[in-house]
Length: 350
Image 1 (tube, one colour):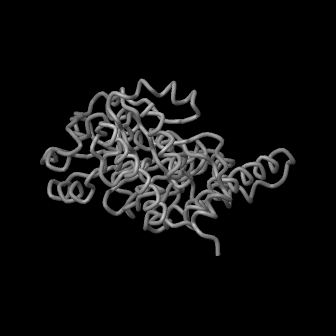
Image 2 (cartoon, helix red, strand yellow):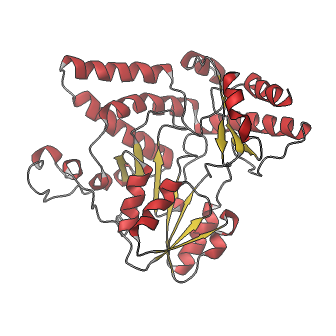
Image 3 (cartoon, rainbow, N blue to C red):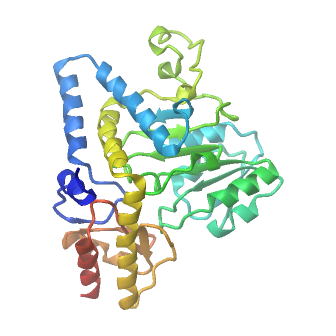
């Protein structure tokens, strides 16, 4: 039986010090192979049935990660698409509570509606800021800019007490942090970060009764029997969350099936322990250098104020990190090692 380390070494061969999973992940070798195989099917004119099977395998794998029945999972392409769906469900004048500085895809569709009351508060005050007039609270489980983790249990209790719904983006969490989909009414994630997929795949989890959502984006893929209702209006929408599907990016889901298989093989708990050990090593090293990152305990994303300006020269040195609002953001995932951490610390020391 392969160990965590040996399996990771088999799947990843980075040529640089890559500490930027919060932007997008490296692809495992098995994922690259699956993508090539899927492209070959298209090139050779073979049946695409195996690729549609990959979509359903991904839906089932994400349902297992999220701890929900597969019937509650829709597949699409982007977070913004599903935020728009949630925004469309709200009546005019409804109040949407958000976290200050959250990722735009979680926020913007509520603002572009033009007839909603969008209120932003500091992340730490989100649960306490739910009030009787709040219709929806929307937040990222983990903040993209600095790795802070939302208290979803407290938010759920506050929302229940005031009759509000919740919408949570797990894009910076799924893959290293257990996805607690039942802590919210609606949740979403894209797959190209901690889930090790390509761009073009996303998942939406809805309640069994679909909540307040109307499938305003429904196309042929949203039918109960898609191949029997792809001409004219779809008269019978899927009886499951598939009614919120969009036309599937088949190559992306073929690749993602392999990536999700690796995540399940390694185990989210093992990945989390690995990632957090590296992040803590980096935080300790920063303290020794006199730098204080944004407090984000229990997160593999470390954001250091004032050092974002160093990103270009670090990139020239073969160290990939991000500049976010002037902060240097490093994010540590399963393919990173203690040597990667030390290399970044040495560069900052120099």
